[in-house]
View 1 (cartoon, rainbow, N blue to C red):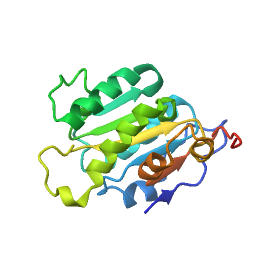
View 2: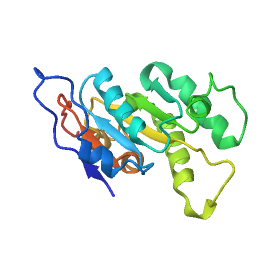
View 3: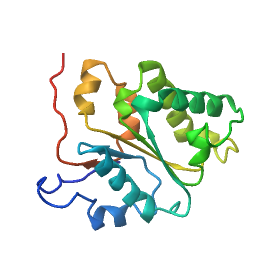
View 4: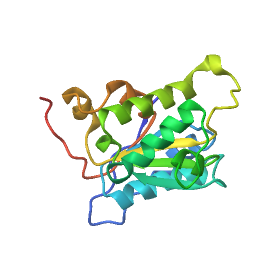
Length: 181
């Protein structure tokens, strides 16, 4: 199920926030949140609004800028998928345990990093795993100013990862539109 938010107010008004109806609808959900458009601080505020209404609201909210911190994201995903231990500071997944991990500029991850993220998300969604002790107890949110429809069509973003992340969608003003190649 994917829920789409109507576009936010014009730029001259206060920074957008998700409508209360959408927050109420997903307050008991741990569905992934995808925040599209807007500035980085607006995307972070929108993801934080979902965190504050979720069952994991008492846990940490960890924001990672994927373009700058891809190496940390990759190390964290590899460690988690291999079942290894990593210090919470070096591992955003461990730091966000029982909270929310917000991956901003997710489109800036390299294709190999996107594949790792897809493997992590797919492993979490696998119903055959049941109450797996290795399962991650957090909520994932991703954000970008880019239009992931076009990025997936161009081949710069994995369509399967886009599909996995696009469960609760928030569209802010300023979404960059680009044509498919």
